[in-house]
Length: 143
Image 1 (tube, rainbow, N blue to C red):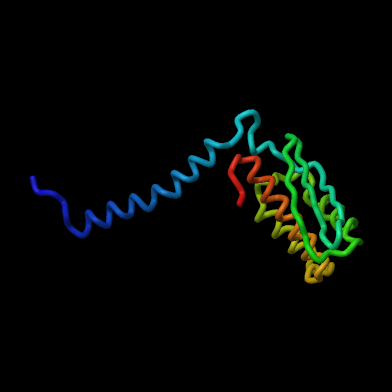
Image 2: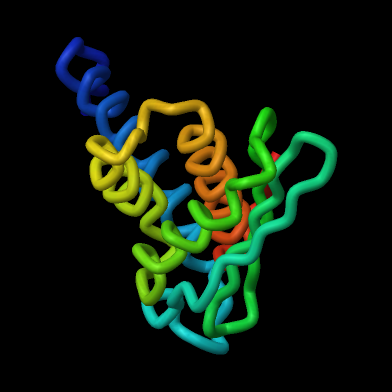
């Protein structure tokens, strides 16, 4: 029998290999997920914050006891009310949808001063906390 060493067989092999890599990584992330409770049942219950020496620290809590921390630098002491306002907006949502929550909060604050430095610092802290939480929920190391 003649071996397939043509251009088409080479491209087909490369295409299958490239397509399998992302799927293998997705399967690994699903395998690493905690099985005690479904990640789809994960919900944000509250946001807590603290202001320490020019930095804002935000902690996002969930109904499954998983929490994430984030820091926003160059924030001012009056950011507590803004964090609580954002907490009201995202409470009850799945924290694994980080991009969706980020865009919802960003777009929702456009006419309320979302371009201001305080809003950006708080939004960055909340986003960092959500990524930290997602890494813990899926048991994926965050660097």
